[in-house]
Amino acid sequence: MQDESEELVGTNKGQSEGDSWSHHARLGGSDRAKDGAVGRMNTEAEELHRIISTSVRDMLDAFRIQAAAGLVTDKALEEIVFRAEHGVFQSLAPYPGEQRVAMLPSVVRMLLTTFLEEPIRSESSPR
Image (cartoon, rainbow, N blue to C red; front, side, top):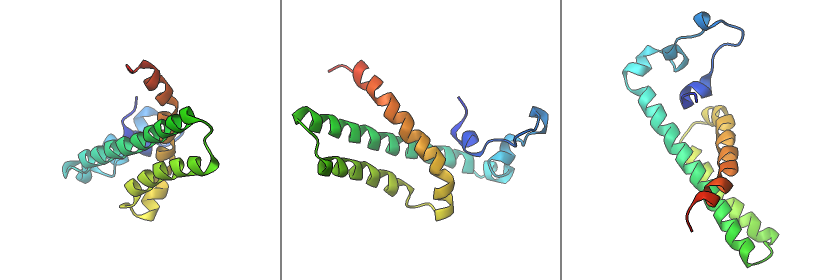
């Protein structure tokens, strides 16, 4: 699997492997790599992934608990989603608007991946 930072930036389409940007250029230049920005970016990406995954898991757990007690009302569902949404939005709040927009595809991917992985995690975890 690709490194998160490489996946976010990618390479130029239609270029051969030899013509693609160097690893450092794709991450914003060798100066950033020297000053630790790449390490910080990976740490930030891991933290965002942790927060987003936790928000989705908590949302699904809350839904399962509500559903076990009976029909989940629209209001209850809205509250469950709002709590998960709030955690995700709060984790993105420190970033400037343009950066949040650029991160959106990766955030959606993390949300969907966690959503799909959660039933498997729940089935395999001891009760």
